[in-house]
Amino acid sequence: MCGIEKILELARRFDIPQGEMTAAPFGNGHINDTYRVVAEGESFIFQRVNSYVFPNPAEVIENIEHVTEYLCGIIDKEGGDPLRETLTLVKTKDGAYFTRDDDGEVWRMYLFIGDTISYDLPDTPALFELSGEAFGRFQKQMGGFPAETLHESIHDFHNTPERYRQLMDAVERNEAGRLDEVEAELAFCKQYEKEVCTLVDALKAGEIPLRVTHNDTKLNNVLLDAKTGKGVCVIDLDTVMPGLAAYDFGDSIRFGANTAEEDEKNLEKVQFSIPMFEAFARGFLREAGSTLNSREVELLPMGAKLMTLECGMRFLADYLNGDKYFKVHRPGHNLDRARNQFTLVKRMEEHWEEMCKIVKNM
Image 1: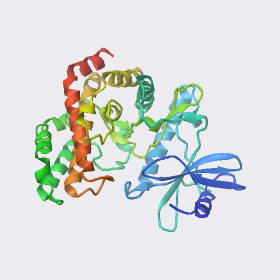
Image 2 (image 1 turned 135 degrees about the vertical axis):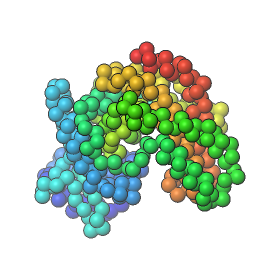
Image 3 (image 1 turned 45 degrees about the vertical axis):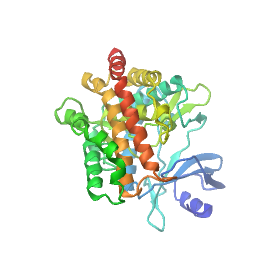
Image 4 (image 1 turned 30 degrees about the vertical axis):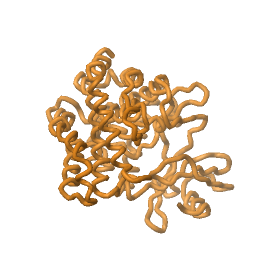
């Protein structure tokens, strides 16, 4: 974190009112440093892009620039308010969309979208349905954008076969000497060796198209209108890149339809909520259904299963590597997380026919 005076000096490089200005930390994000800057009564979001997570931050911002410009045109045609319904990057006085500090770190600024609220967890099916609506609308609005022109902000982020390979590499290295502890978990993963290729194989076969995907479809990345409670804007576009519709759908379900916390050790508490699944699917397909082809819709439950399995494999690989990627707060934390996700995969399989029927009927 920089000192506030340094923040203000950097903020003054942007094309905003240059009079009285304040800055204070904002939000609870874990990746970027975020501040709310107020300049002569106008509010802005000011962020340092985490160059460890995003090694090419300029490419991340270029993606956001192209996506938000495209969304502005679509929202305008729909009769909406582009300044409220998508993020708006603020240019520097030199006409760029970011600046660099003395350490070479990249900073960017957005217009602040007021009179909105966000929630960390979908406590009710109704709230989760609103999340599905918002991400489905994003999918629909970006349906005509050439996804292949975007940069891959995190290489192989949702490439499940590659995540499986990385797990096998971690097994071979056994860097932290923990291999003997995870025999059951590895056996579980190995039974899906062929299934992990389902989505990428469908893409290669031309059954489903490459799309613009958000790739971090948590409820707290949706701003809701403070008065009506309706979805206003999808935020946190750093991971927007080429992907598959099943990625965004699946990661939402992984996060929102689990009845327990992601690191819950008591696996009896890990259940799969069909009402939450149905609510999100209803909202998502209400908006995106006309955009997706029949094979994409058919594969949405598979997206939920594979995104959950993939996340579990990442936790397990990190445990074998010595807990280098995910922050841990207790011994065995990543192993607990992996077991949690693998249990959720089992719960999904118990409800598999019902999941497929729900999506097909919608």
